[in-house]
Image 1 (tube, rainbow, N blue to C red):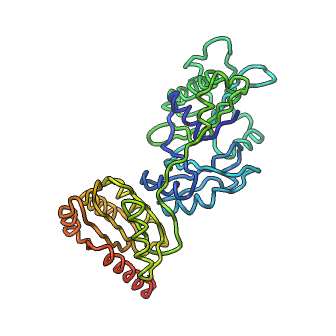
Image 2 (image 1 turned 135 degrees about the vertical axis):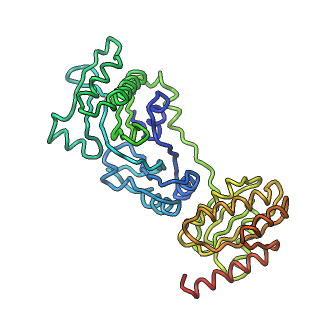
Image 3 (image 1 turned 180 degrees about the vertical axis):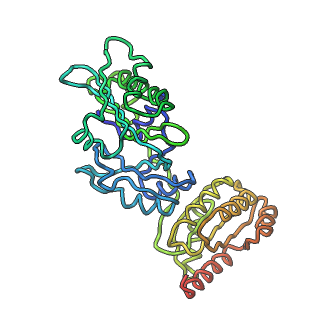
Length: 372
């Protein structure tokens, strides 16, 4: 049985092989939310059980949540060697210094495991095997005795890496072989194994488990049952982003925008009791969503505290690279504290939802007339 990259990486990490931070998304909106929460450039990777996705356009980069939304929309649903992309891995973009290749598989002819490694990794590894097979180091561990760390270091040395990499690379090879034997694999592979300023990390992961052994690995089988992450963000066709703390309040704010002649660009419910961090993440999503000209944040504080909202707004606007006009209706729990924070930051606010909605539409119309 083949396992998707995100599951394989979970197994590798459990066994001590470093991986990058990454999360699964089933929709462009989820990819956008994940990118916002991570707050760093990301890689959007199609999750398929076939090779060649890089050359097929199944791996793309995004520098902000808006780009993540666009890229994820392009990748989801695409066909890669006859397989439809149904979910994505949104992963931290690594600072890559070098790429290596390591795999453990079964040599059917020799009837024993084989470790194959190369100083050169990445999407051209298949061509390397054809054009320069001497660059591939092969080692046949004895399956009847323990594979020892010094043997793995010897493989690393033969790969021709620098002396300071021999020990950490040998450690990765040793752990990958342990994954291979522990989980009854046909293949356990890392391509590329990337060198970063912080160390060696599995940039990709391939795990194929012998079907007849799955009864021993029910934990792996259970990992195939995905749970979708709840998403409170809905992309619409307008240019005024609407955020509210509660579905009803958000829908009411959208109605007010429509009544004043505007068009909502988003439905984004931050829920009751939203923290400063949640406010910041929500704004980060819409501030990086290209169609948005104005943001209408409608908060009636109950469990949600107005001062937390204000702090989140201030921090989000300070960190935003894209200037977007924001209109805030802020009232309720700790409203005086929250309003004071906004005043000190020079951010205007309203206590009336009707006035705030009307103001948002007016500002949006002004920006359109100015051609912005």
